[in-house]
Image (tube, rainbow, N blue to C red; front, top):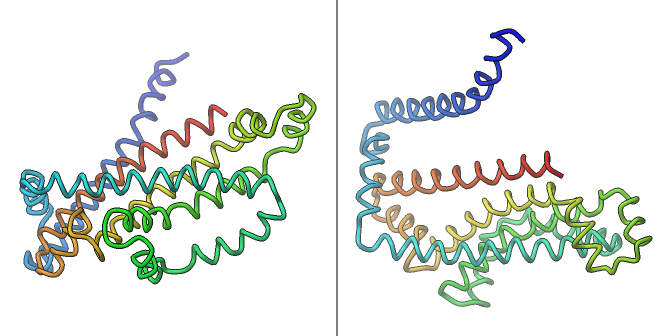
Length: 257
């Protein structure tokens, strides 16, 4: 084996991080150029937004607001993932029920969820429960659809083998259905994660007195672009890091299963 062949894999391994850094640098450069064009009153610079974010993180009330958002998001995510997984497996295992439910779920998914927010407030009232419900409403449907499709596409020989081994429905779901459909299910989890976060933040923006979403809408009402950009930078950083981690797990599952 030549020295060139030996040195090629490390260079290839460095390509994704370098491409990511190049993309981040291009985005920051574009942000800085737009700041220079429109002015600091309309769009703070990346450095100003980062400095303002540091001030927000050090503020005494930021921890309580972040904890409120984190608590609502965690509850909504558990409901989205667990509920979507259970309903998706049931609809995927019963084809008639899935055929009936799928167009209804797709129609619900296409409706702007903000139109349902008055109903959410009527049912759950003001408080964390409404934010949890609104976040779960955003995230559960894609999880159901991806899980249902994954279960439907399991090779028939797997299910025949389970019946031949006289597995119970619970054992079949746990030891056959779930492992065979796990990569596609996890893709639904990734999409559900992003949409649940979006729904939780929107819920805080319209009917809450605490949370990151409340801080955003308060900054909009007070015309504070520096706070808006700082919070947006925080949310983008968190969502990007979480999505990168979930995508890495997704790729590992597709190679491992």
